Length: 279
Image 1 (tube, one colour):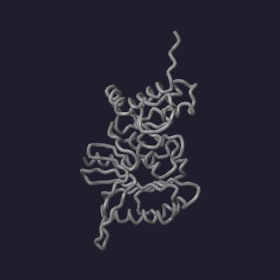
Image 2 (image 1 turned 120 degrees about the vertical axis):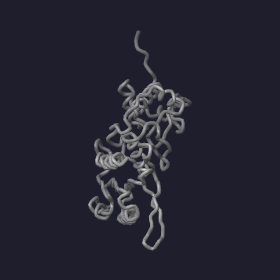
Image 3 (image 1 turned 30 degrees about the vertical axis):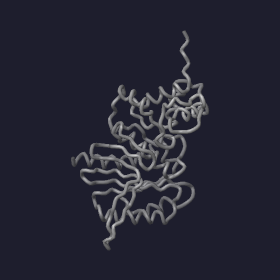
Image 4 (image 1 turned 90 degrees about the vertical axis):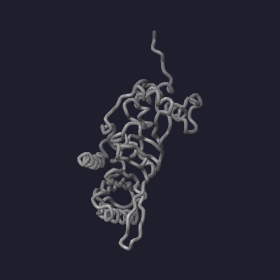
C-alpha cells in the first residue's frame, strides 16, 4: 500500500514534537520549515508558513484549514514552543540533553531581526538552547527568563543599582542579565543595533563605569554591537566602551551567520566555569 501523505499541519506537529524531544526549544519558523521539507520536499515555505501561523494559539491569521488546531505557542517573533497540552505529552517521552550542550551556534531565524528588541529575543532563545536548563524557559519579549543552574538565571531587561560618589543611587537595566544569585556575581550584556549613535554608547559607558565601581570583580560587562551600514563605526564604538570587560562588534549579517556568536558564548562559558569552580 502507498504511504499516507501527511498534511502540512500534521507535519508541523510532528516536527515540533521532534524538535522538543531533542531539546531545541524554543524553535524557529525556519527550523520547522526545514524539518517539514526534509519529510516532504514538495511543500514550499509559502505553503508552510500560513499553516504555522494558523496552528499557533496566540497568533492571528494563517490558513483557514489550520484554524483551531492550537499546536504551537509563540514566545517571541519567529520563535515557538509546543502549546501546553501537547508539550505535556511530548515531555513525558523526551530526551534529556546536557543543559550546556552546543545545540545552536548562531541566531537561527532566516532573516536579520528588525529591531534591537527582536535581536534581544533571538539572542535569549539561542542562549537558552546553548546554556539553559530544560523546560525553564518562560515569558515573552522583555519578560523572557530561564534557569542555567540552580543558582544561576538568565533574564531580559533586569536592573542593577549602583551608587554615585555623591551618594545618589541609580538603576541600570541590562538588556540581558545573567545572575549567580547565591554568590552575587553577574554578567551584564548590552546590545546596540541600528540606533547606533555616539551618545548612546557614551551613556552605556557611563553606566558600566559606575556598575564596575560598585560591584568590582563581581560584575562582568559585555557590549555586543550589531553594526548596520550607517552610524558609528565598530572601532569608534569599541574605543568609547573601554570600560566594558569585553566588546564584540561585527556587521549584523556576520553575527547571525554560523559561529558568528561563538566569542560571546565562550565569554559566558568562562563565567559559568568560574561559578562551578567556586561552588
